Image (cartoon, rainbow, N blue to C red; front, side, top):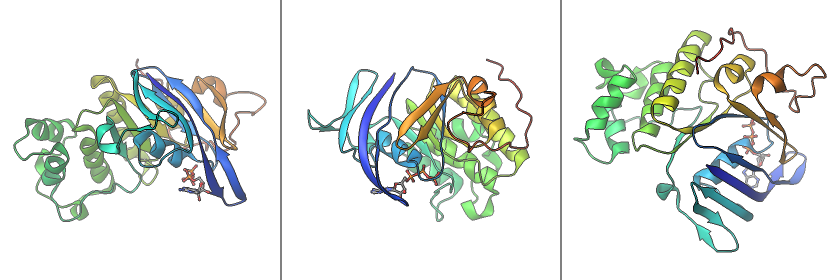
Length: 245
Ligand SMILES: Nc1ncnc2c1ncn2[C@@H]1O[C@H](COP(=O)(O)OP(=O)(O)OP(=O)(O)O)[C@@H](O)[C@H]1O
């Protein structure tokens, strides 16, 4: 269970504002985070990962304190059990696919490297460098790299937005499969309606620093008054097939 209640003063395009999200996420849930550009979605994920320090508040994960301003606790990023996947892949360009995974695993002969190469179906491309891969293949490596240390939480900051629709759908399935098989709690930033409906157990909408609405994606997105709180959910081109779970 993630329990987060923090605040941080940010310098937005229209002036300073306070990002003050508060939520709990049960273990195993797949949450989609939505909101207009500049509302603080990336900063929220970075605070959870320990890459940014909140000005105040608390973050608890499975009863363990990761951040507490009053108690002066701030667990460093490497001690938080988190896998982070970004839009721009962020692979090491001078390392092969295999070496990227070995580096993340922490040792060369780790059997998890072969297991993940097989899981993402990139065994045949394991000695290629990132620049020799397609965007979808690079993102699969980034996903495997994020998961190889067995994190409890997977953070996905618009990881699929640069990919075309067919690859995107395949990776959505792959992410959902890994989320379930590895028992993860996942948070995905997305603006794509089909993706939100397909992936999310729950949507959180961030606006003016706080969470303005939350609930099952289908209920929020199909509200007849269009007050889904965001106005930034794009139609997407995919058919939002229902999840099998
Ligand atoms: N460390 C910081 N200190 C002050 N302001 C910051 C800091 N980091 C980001 N900001 C500002 O806070 C705002 C929120 O940034 P953030 O990247 O979290 O938004 P976002 O919702 O992820 O946006 P987008 O959807 O465009 O990626 C932006 O205006 C940004 O310039």
